[in-house]
Image (cartoon, rainbow, N blue to C red; front, side, top):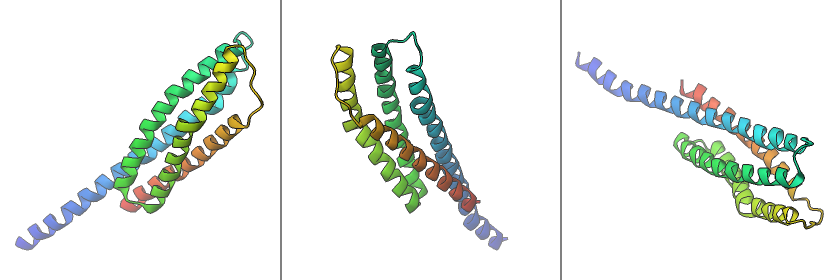
Length: 165
């Protein structure tokens, strides 16, 4: 009887730990997959379609885009904090690398690209002209890189899930 008690006490925390690890990895993967949907919806669907509406002036479309990406950037900062926290708790080195690269992209967009693009929108909305720029192309490339990283993170999280079973 005493041996059964020791075995139960020794095994129960391991099973509980595996269950918690499984739950963290599922939540991590779900957050990544939802984030993928948000990037696809905002950056690759809503934004280009907005410029196809003939009744929407360029100035209004740019202003809507500016506000959309400002709010989306705040959301992404919250999401990167969530995946950073969960990724740290999962303790997988590969996930840490993906998160670091993703955080770098968000950082570049937040402190460099979005402010510069906002300034260009201000000039256009004020009736001015801006020179050709590759800034939008850079932003799009970063968005594609973000999608690839999020897919890798979601898959890595799912791998943790299957390992934890």
